[in-house]
Image (tube, rainbow, N blue to C red; front, side):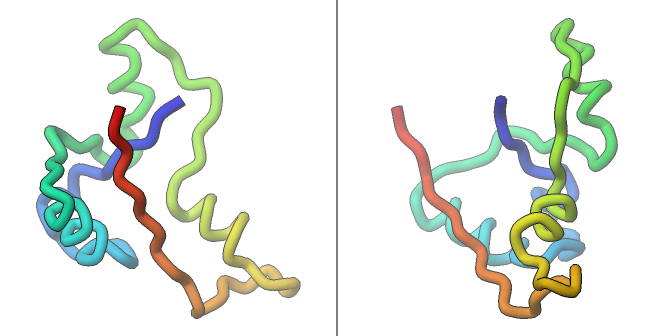
Length: 87
């Protein structure tokens, strides 16, 4: 299991909610991304390493699952959480 960033975020295209914040957060903790994966290309990425996708939730799936109200409407009160991990 792993998470990844869309390549468009690294290009700073401004497509997704919270994009600017996560870029700044990673910069502030002196971390860096080495690459991103194009949206919709995760299966192809994994195949390069002889892996296959058995489950996937993108940002929209997580938003629906965790930020929807009882009417299945996305709440406007979304908060971006980011925590750097070290090993």
